[in-house]
Length: 423
Image 1 (cartoon, one colour):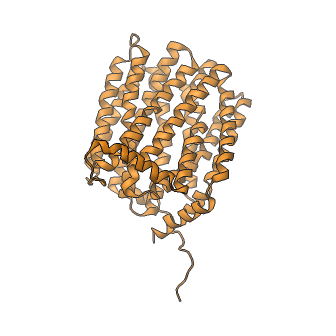
Image 2: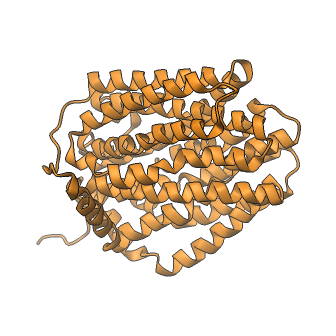
Image 3: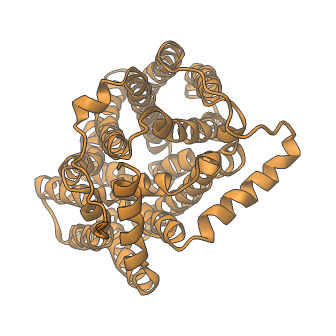
């Protein structure tokens, strides 16, 4: 008699196991170097703007503009991750960013108009979006076992947060001891390192969609929207990333202004900024030890809990306590690990690039808007009160999302994705 019991998920793969894959190691090195460099550029420009204007809003604007190009780059250029060989796209984006950031470093002097510096950063960040779409679409091809992919995805998220911590810490030191130009020069070099690593380690793979006409890009974008929003599970995972997650990182937008308002330098401000991604790295490491279905089931509860430290922020006077509180907030935000991994595995490979591009575009819009709104609130009230208001918004948005949250469908999708495919 044939058993009808559902397949049980196998135990997760270890980090050493996935890092034994040389292609994945190359992608990891490329991710680490380029992401650390991104933090250098953002902090350098934000510090430059804050020094010139003295405005928390304009400092937050410096961070916001670094996310906004992904709206264009992800939505319109993301489909190229399906149309072109992904290795070629990764290399082209790295080279373009290295050149643009080098020009930005040359022009980062007192007489250069701020709008020109913003424009160059916007242009450089436009190429980050298709790079990330191609990288994320490539990882499932490199780690073909879903167990390995979930572990690799968790490791990528952990490293992304660690990169923010290291990048912010390095940026604070470089900007304080040297200059914003020094940080930008290092940033340009990181993209060259990423280029060389990808060139040497990643195997060539043909494009998954053989379409040459540029006019078909609009059809690709529509297809990406259809593949995401016609499915209940994919739609809700994306909405969580669009309308909630961006506001949970509100402390990063006002940390520099809060430090400056209390007489501290950029190094202290970047330490506060780094507390959030540092906590997320720890939380992702702990969460990745749970079986995949439990990780997926924890998404909404962790998102709710992540709002609590933000609500407590306006009542904190000590920098040490604030640092610890934002570490906890970051740890609870580790719910994004199963969100990203599950979303990628329930998307067909032929549509993975455009779906990732669409998801990243929406997240970038949300992040840019959240930084602008939180920066404006900090200008009108105070940085810490602005963070508390962001926490209130997060709870309200989650309450609305909970009404349509597909608990049963998500559980079934996790079972099918992480058990059936692995068997």
